Length: 117
Image 1 (tube, rainbow, N blue to C red):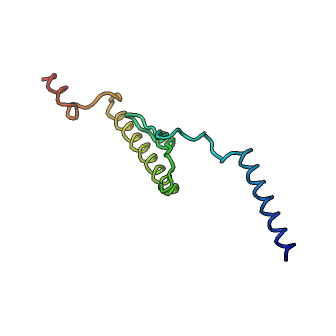
Image 2: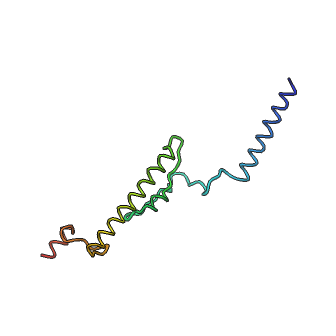
């Protein structure tokens, strides 16, 4: 009985040493170092958000955070929707011969229409 207990203790010690050695050599498996406290990697442009911007989003992980697979699924859907809408908008602008900055007169801001009349 003591021999089995001794094997068990040695096995646990060898496992702990291997785990500690692996942790020191390989780290925690992160691609980037952890962010400083009270900062975030979540960045979006002020305007013109694209699907690739959504794909590149990073969220800070917390103990009681969101389920990663659900957040990834929603971000994938949002990115695809953004790209689809931007493609439709570009096609409509091309069909009506508008540049990206031009707007039809009926959709122009009120201050721009008042200058024309």
